Image (tube, rainbow, N blue to C red):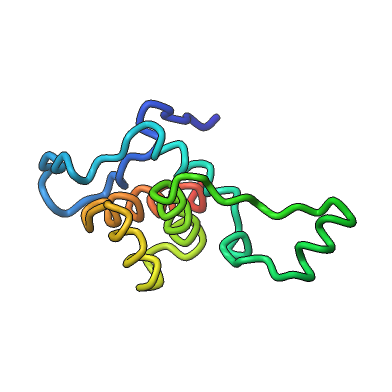
Amino acid sequence: MAYLDLDNAFAAPCASRSPARPAPAASNFSALEWSVIAMAKRDTLRSLATPGRLARAMGGVFGLGSASRLADPRLEALRRIAVYAWRRGFALPSAEIDRFLAAGFVTAQVETLVTSVTGLRLNRVAE
């Protein structure tokens, strides 16, 4: 039977070659931001594209709605980069990194996000 550590759900992978050191406060996310990252796991890369006129019309006729964007631009930038992190790991588009940094995040948070997400993804594949 597997054990799921909910207290450290977004911790970095255990196998680290560098000695443990405290992360700077700027690389931390709030609880709301971690929930946005977890929510982005369900989204696909297709959810990041802007729906065209035909897609919106078909959605209106047949009730096929697309995933809505978050109202807060800062959280939307976080959701977008988290979707890429869940789907592609460290292969993030530079435009998304620029959007993430322009929203007020720092480079250390990109590393924290991707390391946490890929660590979870790699652990699940191994089990």
